[in-house]
Length: 170
Image (cartoon, rainbow, N blue to C red; front, side):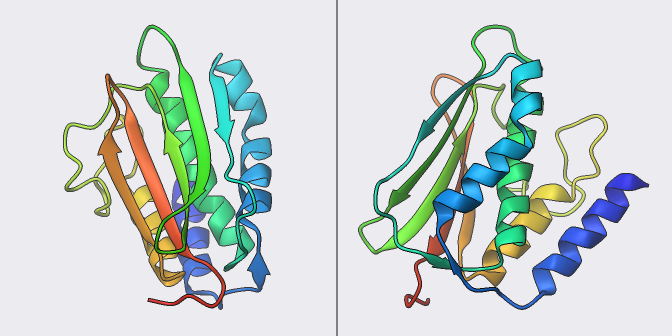
């Protein structure tokens, strides 16, 4: 039942009014700090690559932190299933069209199907409910952003959250 309660809180948060401008660095930093002990316990090497001088984004800091925490937590769990190097890369960048992105990349087994991973009740975990990524996508879209996934080479997954900077709207 705790997962269902967490899902309800995330869903309610997605419907909340968007907050004030914030810097993605601060949002990402608090999210990584929240999972620091899990990262250490699972012996995962973390590589953080931040773009310099990113403009602020308009958004609800708590909602965006939940998205990043969920993506990083999923990456930790995915890497727990593989032997070899466990590397978590978390980065930010500014695209040519002035959108700000957070990228979470892992060296887990990767995804067999990228098409359905964001649908509700679709899960790759034996203990998962399949709501986390669906709710993450809903939160990101409420912020006028996009959440996408691709395969990493030679293995793993790359999740990309793209958000408009303050003053840029789709």
